[in-house]
Image (cartoon, rainbow, N blue to C red; front, side, top):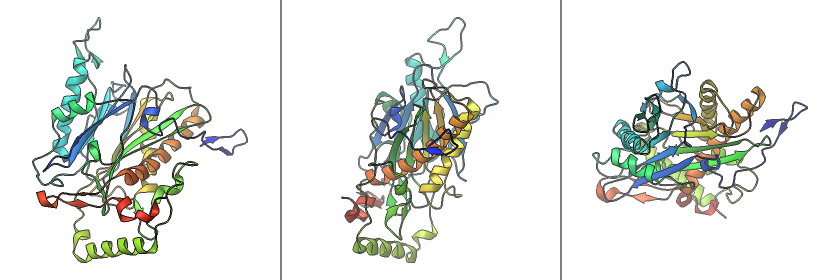
Length: 364
């Protein structure tokens, strides 16, 4: 939302053309999905426009796995990033950023290290965050590497595939399959704000009292109208499965998780303002996932500002940041709705039921 002249609030103008992160002009997204036998993991790369984007980060979870986040401290020199890597594989998956760096360097993109500028002497700036999905496909050794990051970068386009793809391939949230989700909004000022989130949480994104995603109520007009309360039969079956998991002791060993993502805007923001935007974005996670930011999660959100849109005053900046939080929450819902069921128990992995298969009566 944004402020009205009388101090009230105006509603957003609506979602962008694709209702996804690439509605921020110049942003591209690429996935590399590893779902062959023994695998259930992947990499997602968010590529900034040529020249990079101002960036910030906020880490809230108790078990983070990150790379180059200190660089984004507003007190430090580098003020732009070339890409952000989101990956599976726990700490091993941070290696995917090496492939993205190599690909960016081959394209002559990065922090200039020569005067006069020389495209062969650059250092690409690529922060990264990972989630825990080890062993879900069957083999603990199958995790993203540099070549997977390079492949995700090569696949980057101005369209965003959602659901069980890229970094969300092996994701789960509560007892359901997680995945990649995205959402955007265009504010009355003309500023575009968007988010891409990979949902892989210890907590649940779905209220088992109703069967509905917690944040479904935050949908823009016409966005989530096809989602309705599930039948009592579907709800009772889901509650029974949850109780059975508790009785089997599965709930007592939550394992490691982590929800990671990127918020982007075309508004002009400083590094400090981007850091604040990332922090406010975590409010969106709190609206969509319960519990959130646990000791078993490494919840991390990046914020990018391309500066190609309208300038903003402090009031508008606040509204941009709040819109980012709602985009995060809506993106979580889209991730859950787009996920598909998978069963890798034959390979020694896990079986994950999607929300749509758990509550088939909830979709019209």
